[in-house]
Image 1 (cartoon, rainbow over the protein chains, first blue to last red):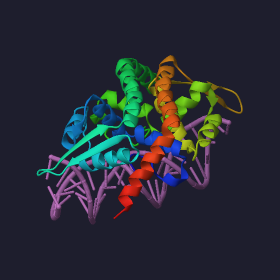
Image 2: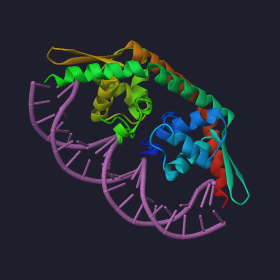
Image 3: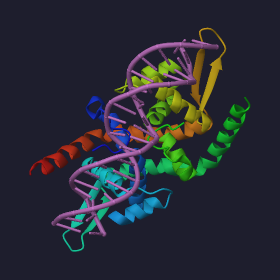
Length: 129
Length: 129
DNA sequence: CGGCATCCACACAGATACTG
DNA sequence: CAGTATCTGTGTGGATGCCG
């Protein structure tokens, strides 16, 4: 049921942190962003997320989607056809969350260069033993 | 060096995801939000974050702060006095990130009730075996 | 006080095999 | 295709103890 490094001792944490950690979880972030664009099928999501670097395992994708569905952020539409077809989309609640997350992603993209410069400066200083 | 569940195979990931995961990391989120309010000393941070539920271990706080400092988001001001005093604050870059993160936190607080209702509905349906 | 070093449990992530 | 089930390595995160 855990979706990230987050859920250890789930019941010991306040709901606030729990929701926050689902949304900010490793794959949760990327899923929300992808779905903000448009609904995706299971393997579409898998491929889309793989595009950013290393992909999600099928298992983690399933787990994260289930957590997000349970939280009411993602809607799962399973059509009873053969072969199976399942579409994932954002609920209204999920759209709101995803927009916040996108804010972060956009910021990251814009400022990544500065972050990398900061890192080089930091490493430079530290390396002078 | 890893700050969350994120950093496995760090070099295999694009910088974009790396930065995003630092910022959205378990403790990174809470640290940024705390520091947005005002600068904190090390143990102030520890206590402040503990207030939200289960606290940070000293080790994780150190690790996360170092990662954020390296990324140029957090400024570390160590005064050479006895007993030691270290103040952490946001850089301009960090303030921008923190504001995005706060957006998420605010949303979470506002919508938490809806999420919990969604969860109950979900569990209710699932429990009818 | 503010760390760093070490040890360890556990749950996360991946691989694989199987099902509807 | 879209999962479920199971097994396993290993990284994360916590606890403890020491240092400046």
